[in-house]
Length: 103
Image (cartoon, rainbow, N blue to C red; front, side):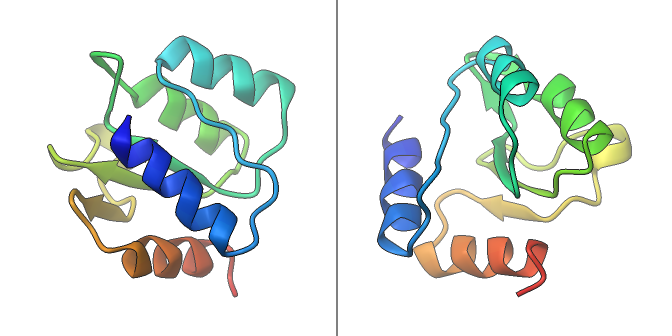
């Protein structure tokens, strides 16, 4: 949760106005079904579950995402996603998201 709170603070400090956090796969999938997103930061482990179903949904919706992990990358079709290995500096997060947004 500390990493999540830091991500929210960094993004808010850099002008992001709509940030949605999800601690479980179920919460993440529910948010994806009811909101629109420009980009996502996806932890490999959400509440003890792999976030693979969330990655599938993000790809199906063509939402670019970066994987944030202390474990490594996602398996299968998602192993080529950009990965930020925890702990990472705030600048690395901002650079990855800026790149995904094409800015």
